[in-house]
Image 1 (cartoon, rainbow, N blue to C red):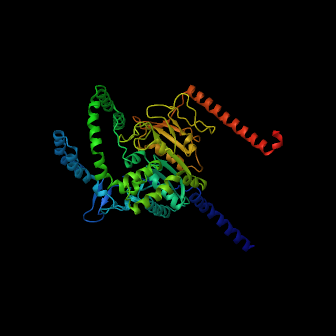
Image 2: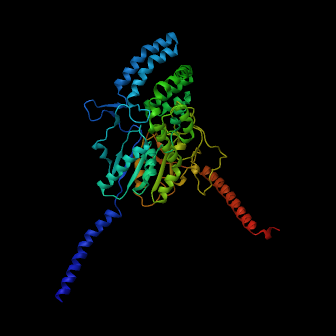
Image 3: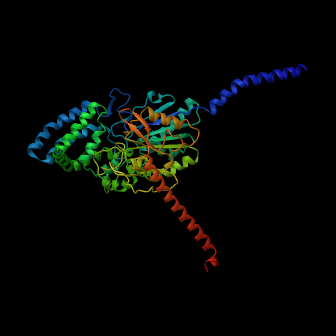
Length: 509
């Protein structure tokens, strides 16, 4: 009897202890908050020469002193150009000054750093940006495949430090290219969720245009680009009115020939003396060249004497990663990784290419950040008679009739934000990211009415809110989509019947 009481007492004690301990274990495993790693973008951390030595100095971004000296050195030759009008002499005089600004970040012919320049990795890299969020910076010049190895080590470190089985990735801008290299090399076993934020995982037309030397200048592109810098206040309104007045009086039309002359006469020298020896040898920047530009870019940049080591590096990323983005992401999704892609639109891109009228987020083309959206030219719509290209039973056309998301790689997982500048994420964007990261299933563009497929950024209020469909327009679009879907179903039914009849030839006699 005493033994039975002792056993009962021990059992009750175990139950009592377990009632406190086991829930804490359950909370720590099932409901544990997964750490988020921000895979940062181009230039997120300065490049340092001779790091951790007495000669250490930041070389990118270039200091104001370096820029001022270069501008001062170019002043006298510019005056001389106005008098003599000899572009060859002018180029000889100013190219050393231009090159001095970016020369320290140049790479060797094989893609390695020429002047002992790197990102200075220190303990601040391991600090949190916010609650449960860490940042991963990298040297944007280097081969994404090598950077992916560093990201893998960082992921292992964060897992160890936090005790988490997995991490989530917020892949910003060029960080998307690094994330793709990581998934290709290491798979997705350590990844819970990915949010691609204005990501360059499909490339950037600006890079492709520069590497194929398609440099042009357009007045409207310059004005559109300048508009992003104008503040959303009374002073900004005055600046905007002033620019409009100057444009109306033809001031810019008088200036454009001068700018065009500079571009035409100096383009080749800028590429030969500056661009080729710096950006031309950076595997990281080559990773931003879209696949459709890639072969032409290699021909233009290297001619008949390419460096075999550099070519091997950039080919490996282009053909294995960049050309297989959808497959790599689909493999991750199939293994349980949750994916969200956010893409911005309705802003002018860098005004130095022939792509003057494409939708961008001020830097990267919307078609690339979205993974293939069909976009109307900047300032225009898809047209009143436009019909959604992929009829999947859902409406993927934006309320302003500018974006057709049905052609995206993952239309159900792709969100668009109108008028939001590249990486100018705010509290509302992070609220969206938190909502997605903290979910326990794959959310889509229909999951939450607060986060529909098409959102609007308000610059003055610094808010992101849902875009609204005009009632009449929504009805028309829905009817058009329904009619197209019905046609598709009828066509498939007809094909099915004909297939069955062909399998039984006797019925056709």
